[in-house]
Image: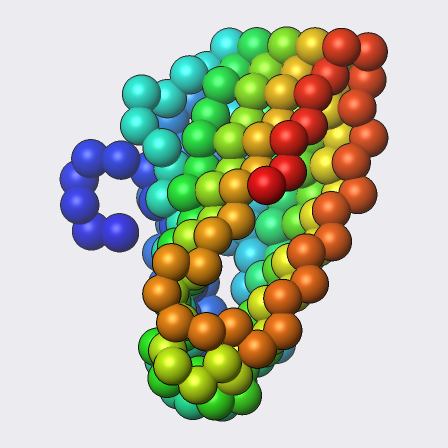
Length: 170
C-alpha cells in the first residue's frame, strides 16, 4: 500500500488499513464496529494500465473478517482487481465478503481472488456478491487457493446480465 505506483486497498483483521485511490475514479473507505468496507467508482471510459490490488489478512488464529464492498464500473471502462487474502495461522477464522458490483454498458471488470492459507484448514471463506452487468458488459471472476488448506468454501454470486452481457465465474 505504500508503493507510489498502482492503486490499492488493504485490510487486516477488522479494519481497513489503507485506501489509495483508483485511477479515473475514487475509493471511499467505510468502517463499522464489526466490519470494514469501501466503495470503488471507476469513471466512464477509464482503463487503468495496472490492476487495482486489494490486500486482506487475518494473522491471529481465530476471528472474523467481515468485508462490505461496492464496485461501480462506468460505461466503457475496463478494470482488473486482484484480491490477495492471507490467513497463515487460521485455526478458526471466518472470512466473509458481501459485495455489490455494477458493470456499466460495454465495460469490463475482472475480479481475481487469490488465497494463501496455513496448514490447519481452519478458514471459512464465504464471499457473496450481487452482480449487475449492463448491455454488452463483461464480468470475469477467478478464485484460487494457491497455498494451504481451506476448511469451508462457499461462493455465492447472483448475476444479472443485460443483452449481450457476459459473466464468467471460475
